[in-house]
Image (tube, rainbow, N blue to C red; front, top):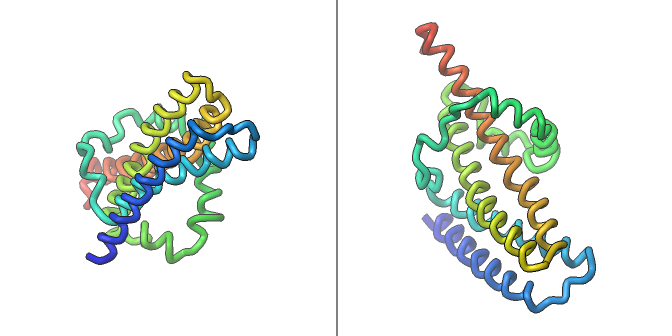
Length: 190
């Protein structure tokens, strides 16, 4: 319970920091590329962190209807996955963020019983990237529209790589699980 309260407060803190950062953006003369790049990156990290932390504490994946998580067009998803080279992104994550086996086992322990946890964790992860993707995307487009071109472009690029790629990756995981379950159901196996 203490962990949930701490994560909730951290989420609220990040929400406040993102609000403050947006306010500062309009007061900063962000002429240097490194400063604009840093602001775009930190903004993406803060907004994504809000939803990631709340997802660690609460079942945020339940906010969206179950129908959202079902993959209805697996062939299109496979084409997007391949065209964007999401597999390289997955390998990068396994070499960096998810390099420790213990971290990966909390997501999926490799056992048949771990599949339900994998599905739940993939939904949590997707939700934790979907909402930031939408929020940051809207703000990035807004910044482009009001003339903050560098900030808008960098914000959208970080958003695409930091939120859209994980969404596709999680949907691809569930598509593969759906396909396996479909085969088992068709053959009468449990």
